[in-house]
Length: 190
Image (tube, rainbow, N blue to C red; front, side, top):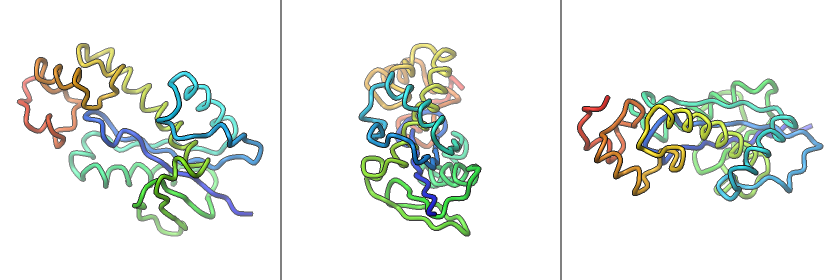
């Protein structure tokens, strides 16, 4: 029997924090019609689906830190987070389907990149959902300690509100230093 794992990452374009990845092997009984790309699902429904997926699959979540992102670049950090998630799975998949056009280097795993996989493949959709819910929870907790950046609303992405806060308040230790505009702003707030 073929065991397929879907893998996706979230937070790649954010200006703050780690990039998260999830790997998911769906149980046969899961209703895969419920699974869509996490960005197309409202927050409340995403949280319900995340619990549903976790109860009906073998899953793992991993991340690459802000420091790792600044050290090895966002693409390599995303691949590193994916690799960690795949290796954390309790079952070894016979095939790993990765959202996008790049795959992490991992010996003894059969892997394939699937462009727009989070829309086409339920296991990848599931991975995008649980990774997004996990990262969002973490960013909301950061938001409580870093008032004025509105991370609970923008999740660290470069919205007008976040960029205004950066100009006014400066960068924090959570900002990715190699990302513009943080790379151009003084580090007085670290």
